[in-house]
Length: 330
Image 1 (cartoon, one colour):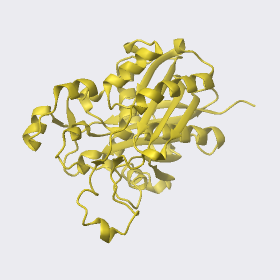
Image 2: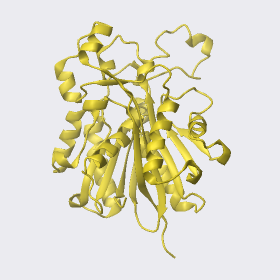
Image 3: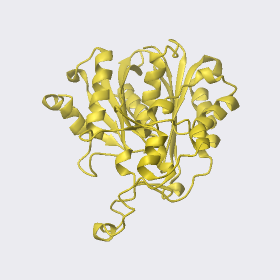
Image 4: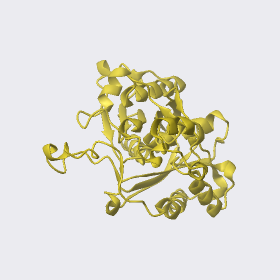
């Protein structure tokens, strides 16, 4: 009996039109962005969602592009998964709203959110690939990362320069050959309270509303270099699982938060810079969307070789990390 696998059929993105430069940021906040900070992060501009644009509307726009490129309509989709840590609301979830915006309501498509913070793109691909492989009901799954973090900034700190808005989407479809090769996920909750938006059910809301920091993104403690340490481990893990070597890799796409770390990891792996791709220089840091946005851009630039292996590596607060490997058959 032939095997059943998931493959990446198409991608789509949405990029807000409003661009903020370091000079714009300084005019708004009175804070100059250190040029060394820009150099190390690679983030040269921010993208700001305009009034009326929300995580759901951005997700729907990215999804429409992915559907069009897949040659599918919303009625062909069997499941929608939205990954975000900037949801429309604590409850209800964002995914049903996205489905409705796409015209999915008459089809009663199952739709739900996941929140592995900025590791969402990899967690969703691992989850959706497993669902497709294990259940013939699901032929096409739409996964969307969306990020509206500028809505949670206080505009008081230089590190807020990093955060942007945007969305990226992937259509995964069933096939009789990989596709999906391997995945590795990890989490370390000892870092849970380092960085995040801490408004939630951990104490009565009446006690929280008097704390002006809670509804906003809050950097409480700096992380150790967990990406420098674990990204190479994750890459080697999925390569070993898949039984392929670094020579078969066409692109490794990382969470787009710090260019220097990406280039250091590639050097440590013995791979040229040409085998990775980054978009933070033109889109800023878009968290749950950034890996899909970078993959889409790499495809647009012809950097993904058919038949070769693409590895996606993600990190997010919590602390969440993961990697997935796909044979590029699209």
